[in-house]
Length: 464
Image (tube, rainbow, N blue to C red; front, side, top):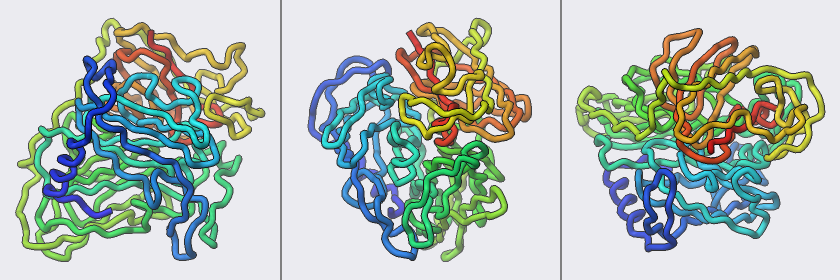
């Protein structure tokens, strides 16, 4: 996808605002019923795509007729509508990751909606209350559907945001392909029981190390989403000044230079990158985690220097996320652990046939008398603190649907009070996450390393 300039963004916003009026919708976060636009169509489809030099990869899954799922643009506080049409062989849904929306729009089969079977459709309608970077993906048969390409990015715009000179959105993900460019087995059980099964081909926007032009001396808003099913990234920018301005759709409490930042599947990062003044200079976005560091994408300075200064960049507006009353909050213990291997039963969203992981000593589906009982039943409007402890030797990105939390403390490091929906908990770390149970319904809580989710590290909470 081309890099977006301010002019192109304004044009795109004008087109988005010109959609006709459709059904009326109301939501917990959207206020009273208002007219919704005509639904944007998301057709799940099987295609071929050129992901490596070996030739076209078959059985790639996407939304649309060709290529990567589109970047979806919404506006904070304005209605959005979508129609999912299932054109693939498996049942599917869409989960709008990180967006606080009505429970029936959350896209979890049988917990919040039925499967969408081949040839059927499902209509989603909601009003995003928060601006930022989010993403969308199926929530059933996820290891195959996400692993084969069904992951797209959402940008929720706020007209009050400060002006950048350009914007680049990057969809970061792996593919498990053999030397012939075709899909290989999606997981290995021995790896599932550890950190997960890594892909063999790494891409940004479905390309290997793509390069984009950006204005010399300008400020680029770089939006990154880790839509991979396994990989944890350690981000670094080489060749330019990069400042962290938002994580997981929310402005950071205090901006800081990107030195080295670790994020996991499901998480998003927004950077203000000040491009070099010299035309032709190259800026590298790198992942330096592990023994095989990679350049993910590059930016090239073009034109005369705009001589921008990141210090002149106005702050992003905070999203309207309720603050927990820590003094009166009830505490929810949450222990992440391994479990003895056993054959898994079918779960809400399918099974890989193993149970390696557990929450509070119970794998999902687990050995309880009621495997579908919620982890906790929460009172609507009350404050809570999740006391989460990771007793495993592996890192887990834990994602909560439907609500956002504030990071309160960590046993292993100093933390800013980030507002987020996903926390990357380190081995042997204890963390406290505070939130207000302000969105009624059943909300999934799970590890976003999909193999961990599918082999026990998942549950849900009920807000009523």
